[in-house]
Image (cartoon, each protein chain N blue to C red):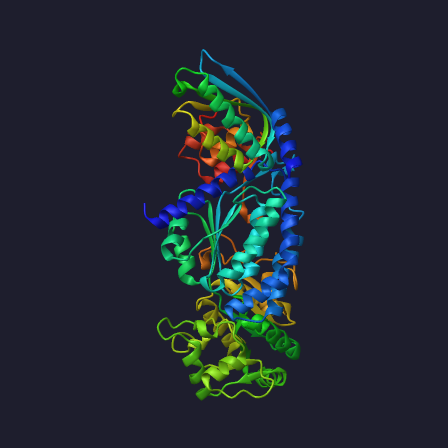
Length: 121
Length: 476
């Protein structure tokens, strides 16, 4: 069990890069590959931790914006979609967006009825 | 928004996300899921059959095992090589490329008569077409249905299917069914059940494939092999105690062969009821309020029903036949009864027999199934042309024949399209190919006649269709 968890985290580390731009209060998470169910829990906890960390670095935590850059994402599972909703609620309304989604990923959010809520571009 | 609407909303929201995720999968990934679910369903065939039998008290578990085999092995065999994802056909001559897209969330209604087999079958065809399903299983078969859904869902998830690709309604209520049926996020209702339910599906405003009752007439022609025909009818009508909606409902014969047919039935386990016994049977087999079959006899054995009615059956009798003089509400046994009970009509001649079949066919079974035993192909086609039935099974047990694959090459299915007569869009046996939207990429292939024709001529009132036609096809 422990081994699997460690492996997931390593995998996640390979899948996400965080870039925090303080002047713009913008946390950009660049995500790579397949976002399947097996990695989702670790993904969500990592992003949540990074959001908390970023908020503490800001004078006004409410200003934090989060962007998922999904240029390199080839597949998203239901759990990842749910994580996007959870993350979007961790910041103020309108402060979460998804950028560079491929047409397939864009369509996935569209069919799920979440493209507007999550501001998918 | 009331509680039912909220519940429907939550289920449809999950199903919508599942549909979104599902459409990303390719053919190989989809086929892998279907294969694994087939294995899981097939391996649980006996357990599920026993559960269904125990819970519903209908039919017998051995026959329900066979139904589960049809719903898994035969359905899988028929769909495993079907293309349901992406480009499914390309024709360079016509310039048409066909692309399959999933429909979206499907609401699947499961009847008490075939609960686990219907879940298995609908699961396979929906997953093959990448559509998530919300099941509503009849309240009297809910545990068996839930278990079938659970087994399929676990296997599907392990094979990479999206979360919530299979759901089951947590409670039974007309309001919840209505809320799901009318939900704007629902793509299709796949309804197999009673008339009221099917009507509700069609009235929902969402697309529906609804299959309701049948009333299968069986015409035994003078050219038929009578012992063979009788054996076939009995094996079909006693299969799971007659719970398949394509099972035979009435036998129609000409007077000239009736004696032989009757004696063959008697020899093989049929008991002909006298008028007094018919009255007794009507009292237990027909619900006086609706005039339809009584739930208390559905899927019960002939002996059970005879005991209920106070009829003494001869030893070895497996089937009751009620000689009838007419069709309709004054002769309620002439309608659909999903139990080992048959109407029996002795007609003066061939024409009279066919007319009797028409009346039976139109008594609540339009578009469903008709059956004929004959060795005269002209008679077979004549009979088929006059019937309003999606499938006319020939020299075949109707229950098994209509559901396909075992006695013919019809697609194996537990939802039998009934055409417009049954308010359906198709007369086919429903399978995965009915659960995809097909997009057609139409490449430029100019119509030679149209492009070479002087279009201004259409504006002249002096030219009629004949004149224009000769110009249109000039030099061809």
